[in-house]
Structures are given as C-alpha cells and as structure tokens.
Amino acid sequence: MTQQAIDGRWKCVSSERFDDYMAAVGVPIFVRMIAANVQVTLVIKVDGNRYQCRQESAFNTTELNFTLDEEFVETTPDGRKFNTTCTLEDGKVVQRQKAINPSDKDSTITRFIENDRLVTILECGEVNARREYERQSE
Image (cartoon, rainbow, N blue to C red; front, side):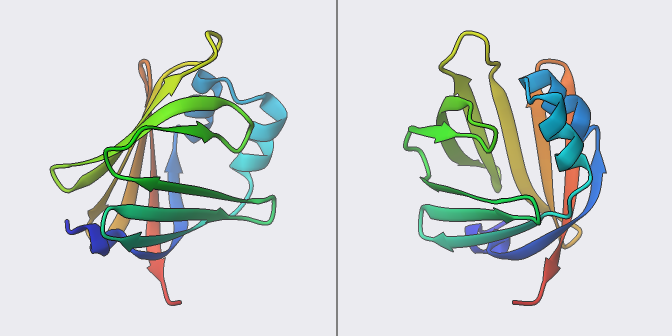
C-alpha cells in the first residue's frame, strides 16, 4: 500500500469486537453505548509523512494529526492521554499508544487497505477488534 492509498473519505461498514476493545482500554460504559450505535466516517489526508485523520459522527468529530516516526501526546475522544508514535510498516500505518496514566493501558491500532477497504485492527492485551470502511466519494 502506498501512503496515498489510504487518503480519502471512508464509511464504517463492519465492526467486530469493538465494544470489547473499548472496554479493555477503559472507555466508560456510557461512551461505549453511544459509540456502538453511531455511524462513523473517517476522512484521511496524507501529505508526505504528515497525516490528518478526522473521525466524524452525529455524536462528535475528532481529529488526529501526526507525522510518521515522531512521538506526540495524543488525547483520545474520551479524554485519555498517551505518548503515541505512528509508523509505516509493511504498507500499514501502525499507531502505538503508550499510557501516560498508570490506570490506562497501551494499545496498538493498525490501518491498511485490503480488498479495496480500509481495515483497522485495534489491539489491547488479548483483545483484538476489527473495523472495515468503504471508500466514499468526496
């Protein structure tokens, strides 16, 4: 996958074990209930090693901006903070979240293209979730 292949607008069409993942990383139950029932669209723009990732839903819109291989402090949509580094490995964008607060848990989020879909694998401990997105016209 080229970096630009991930560039575009993506609508979530499939989600497996996402609630399990959110529970594993410590997302509060009321936020999980909303997240489980809201339609999500990702808008990803790639400019060299810089990525702009916007997640849009009726509930809220969040944005994650990063440069590959540069650590930054990430604040998740539910307010947790992580030291995060994103890398490009074997054509996949790998986002490693390292907990700052001892009560939080490390997590890895991997994004890649498979069968013309954007696939997101979310991992925390033994829990793995998978979400798939279809490309939408701009």
